[in-house]
Length: 245
Image 1: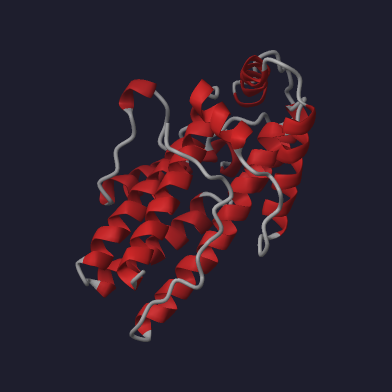
Image 2: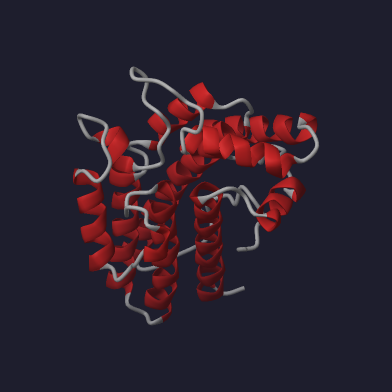
């Protein structure tokens, strides 16, 4: 397999992973998404970081001991954690899946983080689904944006435009750092306070671990490209073998 084919496959896998992660947090799980998760191998792979390892362990226990009718159970869990259904608190931060809630001083929606994300999306030609009536800094949209840029990266690489390819890699690394890893750990902590199962806290650990390893992967690819060649030895692990649904 030549390098071009390998890069295409790896970035397609990145796009599929980020699309799938986006679907997990956008709304309650579909039957297809749940089937993918139930059929996944949750044994910890070699080379994964601490967050991925912990997330794998939590999901492995969840699917080993979960009750019947998992889809209904997780739909109720999603509503309680991310929609604050039945949650009443004035002192503790709820697990609303919006960056602004975790990064603004008053923990409100539609704040500076949303405006910054909106400008980034506009710059890169990425549009959220307006029919969903959600702000741009929803976790699902931020993950979907990375999927879109991953596909753009394939086009830049295959066209031989190494500068554009490197620029896209840097933009993805910057976005992960400034608009995902800056609040996902806090979201995970908040989700854990309201969760009654390990599923969503475990999935957030997996997303966090994947993002951290993805940064290392993108940085290594950029360094190799600057040196005049690219190998695929730094491939980021694929934590879930998924088809986009």
